[in-house]
Length: 487
Image (cartoon, rainbow, N blue to C red; front, side, top):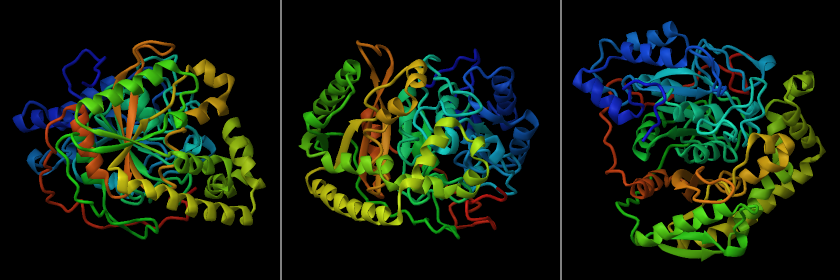
């Protein structure tokens, strides 16, 4: 269940909030008063770059005052937004104060959620320019893990995960290029949906790697993640990377008979973390007990693809996303971010084409496993770490977190991180452990079904029909090439 450290009875999941609205036991204005109280004062976890004020949130609540809660699937549901995603009238910083701009219009994905009744509560902290999996690379302060402030929060969508884990929002938006929406979910015992590329529009999102970026969803349950996914998806006119969702039609009520691909034992890597290795063994045993079939596969094509992301010229796409700013104000960047982006200049166009050829071959090799399996299952992260360990080796420790995540977007796959209990012993005893289900593109609903079965949730939620067309095509506002109103 969602943690509630606030000594009140306000639930922080969509189903419970919805029930209270329908029963007349809660109004959006009352919810805003509660959220304002929760976000007031100090921010010891460094969740926010900009929390909305009570009056700002109240304007969204007042817009719902005459609406029937039964007609809006996210009526009065509070959500947080990673601060590389535009919210109209609130600065977008991407974790870099000198880069900040104030958009006149929200990102289409945010517009859809507001149209569905959701109330934004703030812009969350992140690894600068979404470059990192640690949550530490922010001039606004290293984001602190909600469950243990001495531990890494995960990144780059660090504040988005912490906001949900602390009960400051019922769900949140992050982004996920290399694992940024999955690793923080695992470190906080949350569900983290990394949907099919392009199904959630990235217009109005400061790009990391434009061709790979995805908007991701953090929630406490698969049902909540699915409801948000249903409301957020849709083609945006003018978005060159947009794709219509084409659901595979695969449905599962149980884990029985599902064929899960598992890396060979020699290809599993926990960097010496016995607690995580044991927790993964427990998760596999649970799958077997549920009737799933575990199929050992050759994971090398996936690992080789993962290495391409940061060990080859693909990192140059991160530089391309903000190159004019980087060249004009390199001193404005966090030292580690500057080192990573600065290293991209060594790669040539010839290197890039060679990497694309290599990726095409690896994609072909990786696709050979799919006739044998229905989904992959891996640890979400091979280990965790303390903040002190990250500060001592910020690039090396950070890189470990992406061992099982970096390949997903390069291979155009969908993925869903789910909680898998806690480490029972070892150096990280008591810390959350998570696994990730990975499947082909457009298998998002199938993965949510697997997660429901894994978590013991009831059947898929049925969202009420929208009366104002939030699922319709959204016309993108006039923006520059980075998706910003001004940058």
